[in-house]
Image (cartoon, rainbow, N blue to C red; front, side, top):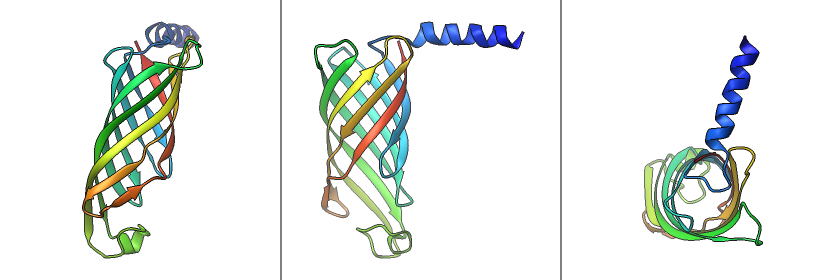
Length: 159
């Protein structure tokens, strides 16, 4: 009986999720820290993505607007680029090794982000994989550039 339920669940999961073009993707983003990515495709060429991730025992929230284009003339592959912004909060920089905050206070930054990436969405299974570079500049709080944010993201792709 368990096998029947498992098989039925896998079939439903595959039918609902499998698509070369997905509407909503939810998954994990892995870079120097770890986080959550939620991406909503408004059209085939436009999407918005929200990223919540942790680094140096702090938290960063990013929102991005992205433009997509086909890549390699192959189904499932897309380039994307975009802009957005972020808000980050870190506490106790000296104790946790944050290279920008060497004090024992809470620190907040607000800034602008860019993104350039490549993604692939499997047709057979509900999975979207992406690799991107997301440079950022802090405008309020610590003022400086973050050029090291290269991340791999795996998302469950929902039609």
